[in-house]
Amino acid sequence: QAKAAGRDRYRRYDPDLHARQQARHEIAWALPQALARGELFVEYQPMVRADDGRLHGVEALARWRHPRLGLVAPAQFIPVAEEHGMIGAVGRFVLRTACAQAGTWHTRHPGRRLIMSVNLAPAQTDDPALPVLVAGLLAQHGIDPAMLQLEITESSMMPTAGPALDTLRALARLGVRIAIDDFGTGYANLTNLRSLPVHHLKIPRQFVTAPVDEFAERVDCALVDTVVRLARSLGLGVIAEGVESQAQATLLRRLGCDVFQGYVYGKPQSPDAIEARLSASPGRAP
Ligand code: C2E
Ligand code: MG
Ligand code: MG
Ligand code: MG
Image (cartoon, rainbow, N blue to C red; front, side, top):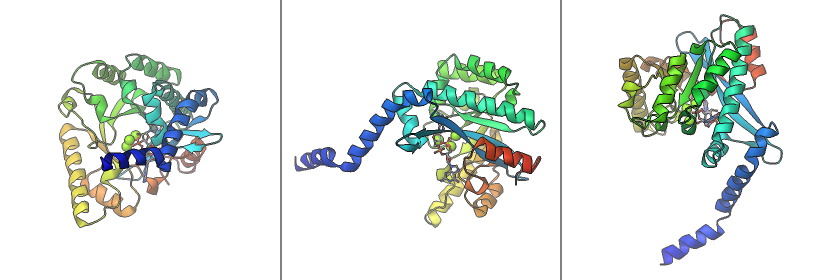
């Protein structure tokens, strides 16, 4: 009883909780206008090859600059967009922007074969119209399908049948690459790896960032090692996220990761910054 009363009081008077709820409401209310007003934009984070350090591609990441709230993190507005049925519109914006950008880079830097990686929310992979949209964008911007990578979450591969699997198979038939983002942090139905056209597994930052102690370090190594072995035996590539130091890169390279992404190779950045990189070092990541 006292506990319940305490919890109730906590609920009612916690200023942080109140502020968080307020922020969620504000985000849900402002998001529909954000698209129309051009407040959403996309940044691109470099991915480099583990063997020679060359630029492998970029991951497109959604950004929102609200006139009063400032920069709103995707961790804040993507879940709200999903909850309020707006993720389709946000996702289409990111996909269109990223494909237009990929078309521009492929035209300006022919032969670079830069991969453009775009995140898909589960609601998008449930949408049977997605392959038509993607096919249209590939054609419109003259993009080699193999240069587009779509990052799905483990929950997109949960159903053993249904729209998500059909959509993913249709996407794969277009020739685009499919990567599973943050592999090992969700509830994947691993048997679906058999029937799903997956090309890469992305190792999440949680397995990679500086571990707190020796045991955690051993666990992280074991997790990365396990994902790499699974990928190898299935013929899939491995991308490690959240690489923040050369020491981590050395370890991840030894464990067999093919591609690195992380602050040590560049934060998410403007198209101009990526363009400068492409022009400054033809064929090579600086
Ligand atoms: P994600 O797809 O796993 O993207 C990687 C996140 O890790 C990005 O955060 C990136 O900025 C961050 N990151 C990369 N390297 C490092 C590093 O070395 N250290 C640290 N501490 N962080 C690093 P971001 O941009 O805040 O995005 C967070 C998540 O929001 C993404 O995780 C993704 O799940 C979601 N998201 C972002 N854009 C989109 C989108 O267009 N559509 C969908 N559905 N989700 C998106
Ligand atoms: Mg991602
Ligand atoms: Mg993620
Ligand atoms: Mg990730």
